[in-house]
Image (tube, helix red, strand yellow):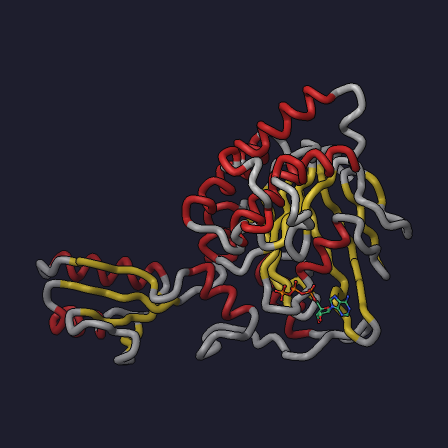
Amino acid sequence: MERDQAVRARGVGKWFGEVVALDGVDLDVGAGAVHGLIGPNGAGKTTLLGLLLGLAVPDRGELTVLGVTVGRALGVPDGVAGFVDGPGLYPSLSPRRNLRALAALRGLRPGRRSAVEATIDEVLDEVGLAEVADDPVRGFSLGMRQRLGLASALLTRPRLLVLDEPANGLDPTGTRQVHRTLTRLAGQGTAVVLSSHRMDDLAALCSSVTLLATGRVVFTGPVADLAAAHGALDYRLRTTDPDAARTLAGAVRGLVLVDDPHRAPAPDTLVVRAADPALDALVRRLVEAGIAVRELAPVVAPLEAAYLALTGSSDDHRGADHVHDHQGRPGDDHHGHRDRSELLTGQPA
Ligand SMILES: Nc1ncnc2c1ncn2[C@@H]1O[C@H](COP(=O)(O)OP(=O)(O)OP(=O)(O)O)[C@@H](O)[C@H]1O
């Protein structure tokens, strides 16, 4: 394992009775990376995060966290902090007293009281809760609890931060604040592994992602590679002359006009299905014909389109290798998944 690698998983399996939650998962996260876990409900994201936090141990495979191989004993590895299934908080206590209790549990208190108090002030300020530091947590919104959960995780200045859906319940201001915090930490060398169902969040925050489906890795790599994994997308095209645009579009090789009234919300808008080269050709022709382009935008964002295609949840499954909707079992071969993973990452996932 390289010195600056925070997580290395090879062939990790985890099952609960008959249910296979993780099946042969490989994962690499470097220091300073923000790595997103995505996948449909039940894909195994929380289970994997739980293994990183030492809440459970793998039934199969190898897992190394911050250079230490995870054995059979439970327990948060040194330098790791975070939460799954929402942060654990004492509702009757204020954020400040929650953090004091946590600091005491983590052995931060003796002889260093003022330093601990300063750190508590710092992390509360970091997540934007300084003004409500002494109010009871009971009255807090979901987003405020999430932010307090992040503050708790920051208390020990972790080298690996593990967060299960940290953006859950956050308003746009809270989301930006959390993004800023995580980006700053990553800049200082902290590795962050988080799960999210929000593609916009992932695109804005993560350097790399792993897409899980029924416990298996369907894609792993840079976010841009996932977004590019889906060649032809549907684009909304709004011009000053839709009839002429339609005629020109019909003559471009590699471009398909999609006549779906549900996808063309206005009379001046066409929907075309194409990859970049055909789109470039269309725009050139429009400009040469004196037609102005008012909008050219994907109907579904590229990252979301790739996700839908790879998990087999796209409406039309265009370009997708369908991911079988069944629980994997150790020993199943799942050739469909493997082939797709090899295609996308250049190596078996
Ligand atoms: N403690 C448990 N006991 C039994 N089954 C479990 C347990 N924890 C997880 N599972 C099962 O393991 C699978 C993976 O669950 P997991 O919570 O990791 O998925 P997830 O990707 O986090 O889903 P979501 O997006 O809904 O949070 C599911 O089939 C789930 O029902």
